Length: 172
Image (cartoon, rainbow, N blue to C red; front, top):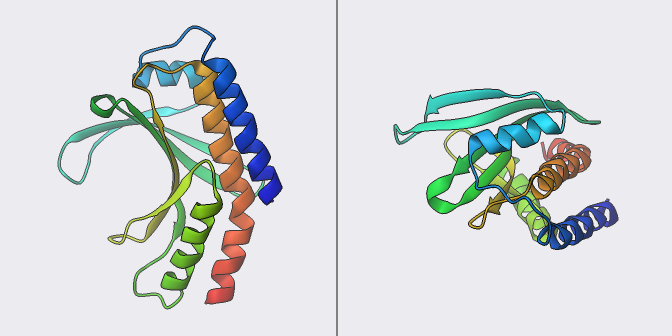
C-alpha cells in the first residue's frame, strides 16, 4: 500500500510539473471548481451554512463510493487565502472519552508523517476525523491539477480505510 501511495504522489508531482506549462489557468472560485467537477462527470450539490464563528460558508458536497466505503467529500474555496480546501468529512469518529482514541490518534499522526499528499485532522469537540488536502492557488489553478489532487485524495483515503478501521478495532 505504501508503494501505491508513493506512486500516486509521484504521478501527481509529475502531472503538476507538466501542468504548470499548460493553459488555461483559472482564478479560484467555487463556480470554477464546480465546472471542473462537472467536466469530470461528478455530481455535487452546493451548500451554504453558517460556520462555528457565525460566518456564511459555501461548499460543494459530493457522495462518492470507493471500493471500501462511501465518502462524504467537500470542497471549499478561501479566496482571502488563495486556498482550495477539500476534505472527506466523517472519515472516522474518535470521541475523546473513548479509551482507544489517543492510541488511534497517535497511529493517524504516524500515517500523516508517511503521506506525501493529504493529512488526517481531528476535531476534539465532536470527534470527527477528516482526510484533507489544502491546495494553494494564488496564481489560479488548472482543471487538470485540481482533478488530479481531488481523485488522489479519494484514492488514498479509500486505500487506507481498511487498515485504519482494522487498527481502530484492534485498539478497542
